Length: 501
Ligand code: UD1
Ligand code: CA
Image 1 (tube, rainbow, N blue to C red):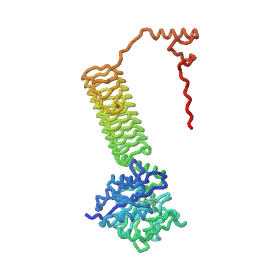
Image 2: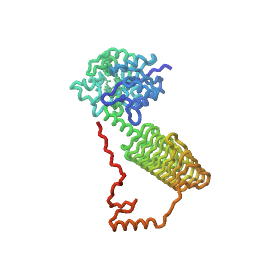
Image 3: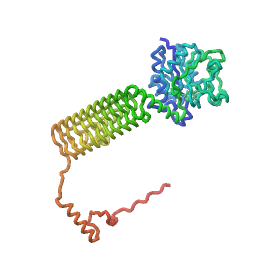
Image 4: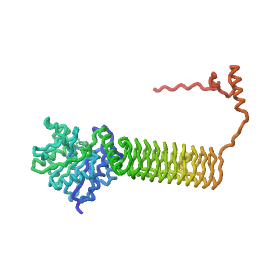
């Protein structure tokens, strides 16, 4: 099938105004590089008549940008040196297949654009029979954008860049989004005629519009229904703004779909996050990447979930971190818990405060409620992991596994020195350092025996009191809080700190 339409995304610029070492289009908003948002908006257009992939014009940090955009199915064309938006499109035209008759041009730095708006632009272009159609918007503050110049009859005559505005044009509010649809033949013909007579000495794509009009060609303009959609990122302040708008847009979609968000403006939610109905998200929560959350969950304030898969009826309490991990239905986690690296918390399990779970399975109904580290562990069902239990999974070279069966009781303060297994039904005395396997249903006590010295403490108190009364030095080995302390004879003098040269 010949592909009639191709998309060209301009992403070769350095982004000088960001003052960054990184290419502008690789800066992230809502968890994705700016250019990735653009490619995602374009992707659904391909299923229509247009079968060609998007072409991205790369230049600054070309290798890195190429690597990223190829991950989104795009092809690239190199623009070097970068001589302006008109020059960038010209490079793309040289490599587009002959079958491409129509070209959608998009800037790589405007991540809020929606597929439907692009469809409207393409629709108007086709219906109007235009040689070029501009997506425009009316902005309260048009600073920084090229302005659409219309004739008295309302027809589009050209685009004037901010720096070249005439005094009588300063009131123009309709701006150029930098998104256009062109007939390929017309575009090719006029790109060749662009000059560089402007403050940046660049070939401006925008100048093509006036050239087309000068030859009697028809130019259309499609007004974006939501002006935010065309916002571009030239500065850090604009980056922050589009990031917040993307999150806000996602929050609104979630609320419309039956999710409760308290103070949605305090949330950071990436576009691919999915949440089922009647889940409640408390304030200050960050939901990142491909996080999926089931029904009737509660995600506590200031928690961060990244690529988390959360079942139904889960409670995540405040200040909990979940990275690349799963929590099954009916489980609860937190507050102040940390799940990471494929932690797998099964149904109705309970992970409490200050518990870290790394690359471990926590079986159904199992509890680890306080101050625990489970790393590289597999814990069966209905097991109780006492407060302060630690898997000693790292021997300085390797990570070793701990396997704990079902209905095990692990006393508080246990250290499990991996590799080690605790059989189902086993019982570990509090404070044990377990270095050997514990058989099924066995009791393991792995700590030194307690020694009680009757009356020792009373005697000590009496000695101290007597010494104080005599204003003597306290007996050897005892320090009174107010006692004058002499340095021991063998104490070293504090070493003088070496001066830096
Ligand atoms: C451009 C438009 C302006 C419009 C605005 C919308 C021109 C001359 N001006 O201005 O009318 O209102 O976008 O956001 O087109 N790029 C290249 N190669 C280059 C130069 C730029 O690939 O040689 C890329 C950039 O990486 C960027 C995009 O083109 O993604 C737009 O360039 P930018 O410098 O941001 O243009 P603006 O000044 O914003
Ligand atoms: Ca821009």
